[in-house]
Image (cartoon, rainbow, N blue to C red; front, side, top):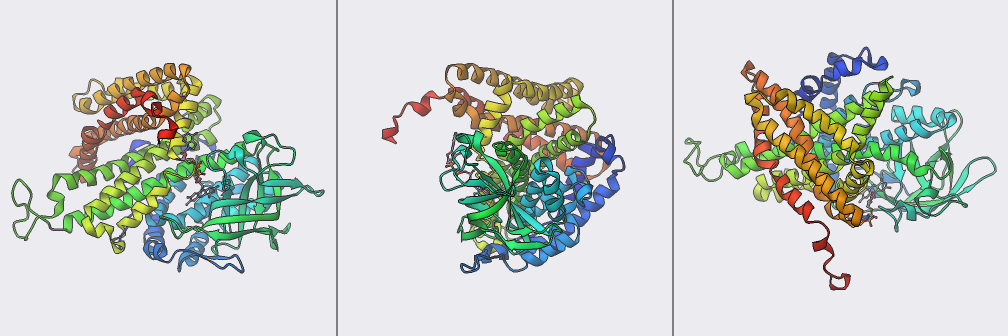
Length: 596
Ligand SMILES: Cc1cc2nc3c(=O)[nH]c(=O)nc-3n(C[C@H](O)[C@H](O)[C@H](O)COP(=O)(O)OP(=O)(O)OC[C@H]3O[C@@H](n4cnc5c(N)ncnc54)[C@H](O)[C@@H]3O)c2cc1C
């Protein structure tokens, strides 16, 4: 059975030494009292909950899965899930970063996201239930009417009610413009909704007393396509005005998917049969409202990748130090033992260091992005807000796709470190691999993220957001370019920065002639940009590690070694990615469809 130790030291390094989040946040009026001790104490307590309560349920939950009672349409989650959730609610964890006006604790998002990193390491399937509810809270908070907020938010914030996002239908996943669910207005201002939704995470479960579904559907007179989609609240139990539970609504689970991973997360086919719903925001503007939830969920999915990368690394590192096989090529290292531990073998080290670098780079990238969110929400300065929002827009698809692609690589490497034992269920490594796969698919596939990055976020504004981020990198290079010890980091960073700008311009020119050039280059392009961000953050981390390496704290020695590994062994991947991105569309369209 795998184990999990919350990586508190590295989290605190990222928070305090790399980004100095306390000083950044204290500039904002509603975080003026925020302090490092509170942050550390929350991380420590949250870490205990994740390691001691949620992690032990991960492997048994995967084996047991969820079950659907076809007569009552109720879903039972694996043994222990409900009790762990009750403890989560009791501890006030769902309320961490929510609005105090609705019972939240008003803490910064960086705190909440760190808790979610640990929850995802401990048990991704379990973490999805509260994770989606928090997304529903954010969408309603941003777009709900005052009445809707007063009725639903306190229960979502406390965790007594959970939430879902109901977008996908059998014939429409990526292309939501095709969706058919229908909402008919009623005389009392409510709507009756009919349709079928598939793949709805947590669509039915036994963790909370009520489930608030956020459903996309079409009004009778809605224009075709994505401009005719509206967003509705459809509660499982229709609440009375005082928040008590009323009648059972006409939305129920008709099927549970049998799937590759996250088997303890109930993936539900939902039937809406005259379900009562209430419009959220304006008619036909549902997709924009849902984007609040989708953007939060995209960062959340990146977090899933990070969480799995970290836990897979931890277990593989322990195993590699214990498992004895063969001698080092350069001669025996553990003379007192019948063979050397496999960590002496260079390729085992490469696999471990790859996972470690992906975890540490990912943590820096996602925490930076989340800090921008806190700053955007809290600042009074319009220029700063716009700057932060641009950075979030640029980085969100990278967080989602780069971190989850990396998690797939990292979990597979860590499984490989276990040899045949990695393929056996009880070691837990094969579950990490299976669980990691979904994150590349849902919340907009990673291909869709890459199109969003290159097409909309970069070419869509003539590279303005990218150039803005580039200025941050240029300032770092300027500041550290003459420092001899930093050359090994600054030079490749500067080189990649130049190449990204040239590549962007080249694809932009080609796209003028044929827009499909964007689709041909986008996936490689996103990965190159992911590396650019990692190179920047690893260079920043290496600078701190160099300054502190004589402190005697082995943390900095390890940080420096990981940064060096990253620059030497992972960053060079960008050369081949840039090359394949530049070969463009032609090799992809030469073959006629009929020949496939
Ligand atoms: C376990 C699980 C949980 C889920 N949870 C939820 C949930 O809670 N709520 C919800 O609403 N949905 C959920 N989903 C649905 C999920 O978001 C969709 O499966 C996903 O968006 C992809 O849609 P699709 O499956 O219809 O694939 P399709 O849209 O049919 O895509 C098929 C392939 O074509 C590619 N493709 C499509 N369009 C383009 C394009 N323009 N350019 C390039 N490539 C393209 C895609 O990248 C993909 O590789 C879940 C799915 C799963 C499996």
